[in-house]
Image (cartoon, rainbow, N blue to C red; front, side):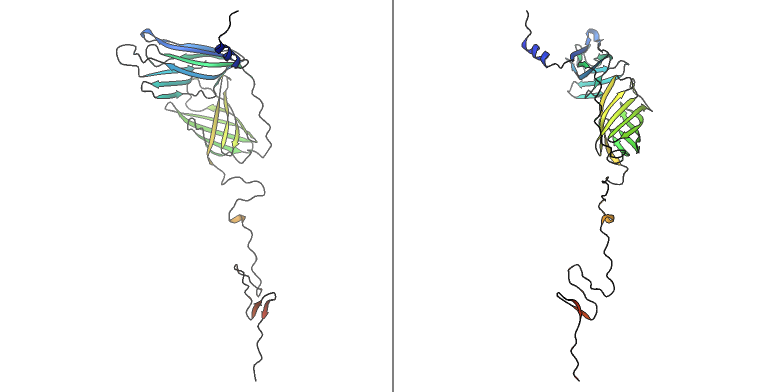
Length: 314
């Protein structure tokens, strides 16, 4: 019986149950011929832990000099660009499209390309293939009134694309409009849905420029604090899903929300002023000395008493 090398055996033991490590490689061959790679996510499976890499010797296809940059590009079943990374000859790295952070790919065939680089360039995308399990139901949230900790209405932003978003929240209903720049063009999508406790759910659709292959879909977000909504989006086809976070930059509420029975600090929260003393009553200034009415003086343990005048001698 042939024994497996120790390193291979350890890798197999560490691989999660139901998972399968896979990869696809594209390259540039002689005469600058481009060779693509592909992989298929079968039904009932999902690709996770996605990584991309590019390797090049910077050799030009013809003549002298060197290639200026090398890249790796991942496309979806509809031909849409999911991820595009490049590295320049000087060592600068840049992501031109998408993000691999938390990316999950549903069933379908995906294409890997090496669109940039010289002779011998290779671009590889690797992944783990796991059983697609339905997400667990969100934990029960105690009802604290529509919208949880105050209204969501205000200005928000997705920091990953520096978007400008506007949320209008009324009761258990909400709407959102989100705008950002993508490859030099303005992308806008709008959505409407519901707010239940700390959970926000809505459908979104593109209203302006839509990058090729981008789909409408749904979003489920949870209010993790008074200024943050975190969750994920899923396309209508179910093939793409990725985490997303919105941070509030301005609230429509005049000030922070306060629990019932408490007041915001300010003039309205001060205790009512004491009524003015009745005419002729003793007055006690802040420094503690009692001022008596005209014709009287203050005696300790006695209070205000009239002055006693000695009888005039006749």
